[in-house]
Image (cartoon, rainbow, N blue to C red; front, side, top):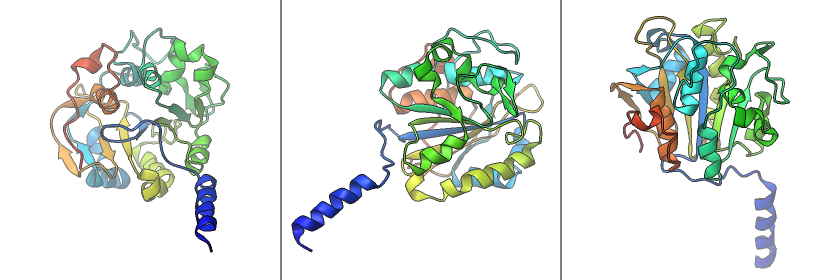
Length: 279
């Protein structure tokens, strides 16, 4: 084959393969995937085989807390830096700046993948095993009322499609349904679901390149401390057990720091930063 023909073949091949490259390079990673589980004490979660495996392979936080009970306020806090007046699980419309505003200001991409979500900017409280209270993004008015933004909230079946085509965004928020997240089934069920659903991605070096998987819970099952399991795994992460007191605002602060997003002017500003866990 001549040099010109060989070069032409390489060019054609490069355009035919899906690319996993992302437009926004971060300080530590280029993609963050959040997967949120439900209502489990730290001590119970860390005993589960897959959660324990993630903890051992990545950075594991042994003194990590959520911020409130019941569920919904924690999801709102994680994505906006404040409870924004949320005190229960009823549907609420929130006029507040949130992480999406910061991401889009830096031309970074985002998408919410929610199991059993029916699409079309659905604002109902539930559908099958989907629960709106676990999807904070649909409660922000500046997303809910914006069709282009709302289109980034999709059924979780789209995750596999986007992953296969190299179209996953910089910021992924994956919401298991009420069975998969352990809400209605318990943490052992959630652990098995997580292993079955995500192990193939974790074992794919190309998929995980420049990616971190952040696994956490919305709240503890009981106890005033509200201590929850949280781990971060990825090729850039050093295996470590972090015992310093951190909370969900530290995760929001991490996203802001990684992409130099600025802040939301709330508890993300005063949050204790995630310590240096990077290779």
